[in-house]
Amino acid sequence: MTLPGPGTATATEAWFRRRPPLTWGAAASLFLGVFVLRLSGGTVEDAYSMLYVFPVALVAFAFGLRKGAAAGVLAVLLIVVWAVVRDVSLDPAGWASRIMPILLLGVLLGEASDRLRRNDAERRRLETAALLHRDAIEINDSLIQGMAAAKWSLEAGDVETGLRTLNATITQAQDLVSGLIRQAGMGDRTERPTDRE
Image (cartoon, rainbow, N blue to C red):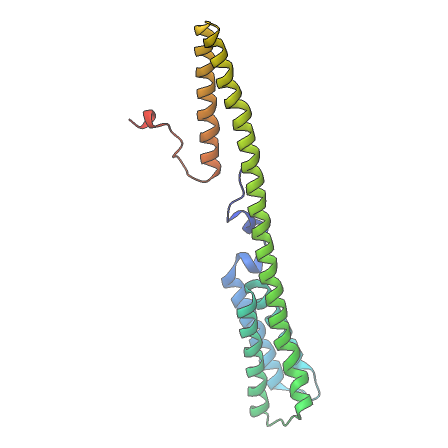
């Protein structure tokens, strides 16, 4: 079994995390579409401004707290531009009802996204530690026992069996270490020093 690396989870992540340029393009299109819709018609009472929750949510979930909050601020700025261009006058409750949900969405969803990423990284770290622990037990069981068997054979005077067991243990050790190096992503740095000379 190979060790999970930093890039392992990317194959299973959603498209908006795997393809940031596409995500930014989709978010920009949504911002522009809602802004044009808001400018082109409707009355002050129409809730078109709430459609900004879609690009804000996309950015927050894809990129985390900071960019989610920035997307919320951008949506608020676009609402202000709409109000200035259309000469709309809103009371404090009208502004709060349009601004607060969008800002809170960007912040809260961005924070949740960051927390999910941290938890996923911790899970992968624990899985890696468990695999390394398993490999350490395998090395201990295989190599220590093989060397002990070789020692007993040599002490008993059976040199041929002792050397054969020791050679098999050395080969097994080289195979185990080479496999661990490959799993760690070290490429072709698995050859023994004697192989490179």
